[in-house]
Amino acid sequence: MKVYKGEVSSLPPDKSISHRSALIGAIAEGTTEISNFSGGFDNQSTLGVLRACGINLRQEKVTARNGSFTRKVVIHSGGLWSFTKPEQELMCNNSGSTMRMFAGILAAQPFESTLVGDSSLMRRPMQRVANPLRLMGAEVALSPDNTAPVIIKGTKNLQPINYELPVPSAQVKSLVTFAALHAEGESRIVEHLPSRNHTELMLGLHVEELPDGRFSVIVPGKMTVPAKPFHIPGDPSAACFVIALGLLSPGSEILLENVCLNPTRTGYIDVLAGAGAGLSLENVSMKGGEKIGDILVCSSLSMHPLRISDPAVVANIIDEIPMLAVLSACVTGEFELHNAAELRAKESDRISAVVNNLERLGFVCEEYADGFAVTGKGAEVKGKVPIESYDDHRIAMSFAIADKVLPAELDISDAEVIGVSFPNFFEIIEGLAH
Ligand code: S3P
Image (tube, rainbow, N blue to C red; front, side, top):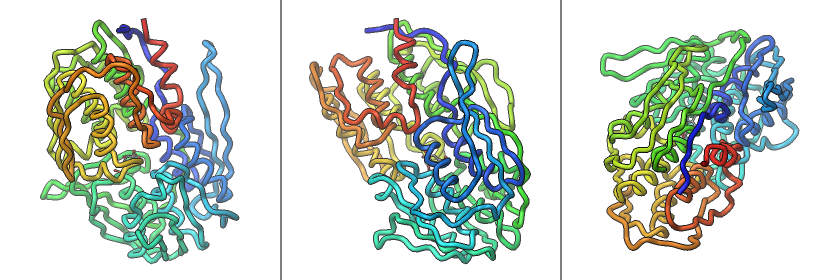
């Protein structure tokens, strides 16, 4: 087995913050410069739908001295009403964040538009998008099974809303926030379990803690958003895959530089540290309202099995669960998860995707409506094992990491889907291999 050592300075820029920076740049008055924008397919889809609605933006490559390059996006906008009716359907490809968050902006535009996606996105639930926007006065039509196409007939006269999120979803919180920016008075968006808070931070919104411990985002309405520059830090959800590789490979030591350490994103680091993983944070500072720092990972083959059931923890680590499950199974032969039914509504049904692939690798699994357990390892599987990515980047990456540490050779279908969030995944991993 290879040893993985070295520094990673080219993690993909954070996907969530990249989406928001482009959407906020499009509704801000003036010129927004975004440095270190993500080249992932999902973020490029957000730029595509903005362009299709007449937003003036350009993307440039910035080459560093060592030959590597980053992306800079420059958006010139006159503010909230700079969008024009698109000539065609707005193609969001695989990106749920693009479809859902942009819907909040389109709800305030005085024209009709239609959001569509690839086959995975066309299966995902969109009632959570339609419900609050209808309450605010937009007309929203969905397919009979409440999926896309999402057809939005917006209005310049959106009504403010007091909205309790029915599911812990930062995408829904953000879409209601974007719509509420345009509304005719103050809106409040209440979440029972904290989800990622980048939108609130980037827009400088006030968040109130209620006496019962819930949080309420306050959006004043008829807000003018001034343009300001954004710099996108490294993606902690992408870092999780490299961390898993470091933990699973004997003798490994990896330093991941400039990672976003926003506490609404780093629950998985606490979960891993609690199970005995060798992880530490270094050079931690605040930049542009976000906590940033380096993560040092050391091989940790004596970790305990991960058992996750607290709904607040599940909400925080929702994107990292496939990797955590595969990691725990590989190290200990065990894993347990409850209260995570939301995983069935991601790019794939991530509960059955992980269970199905782990079973192909000889693990013994039990599937529940809201989670699953890995209860042991069967006979060691060797040779070539077909693994189904289900066209889901996080499933493909979780098993690509398992491929590096298990005796079997994993043959992952459609692995190019990894480019959705981590185009340089294999390059980084090969660069660390010794
Ligand atoms: C995201 C929120 C999460 C997450 C997705 C990105 C965001 O989705 O799974 O990858 O950027 O707001 P939900 O809001 O559906 O939980």
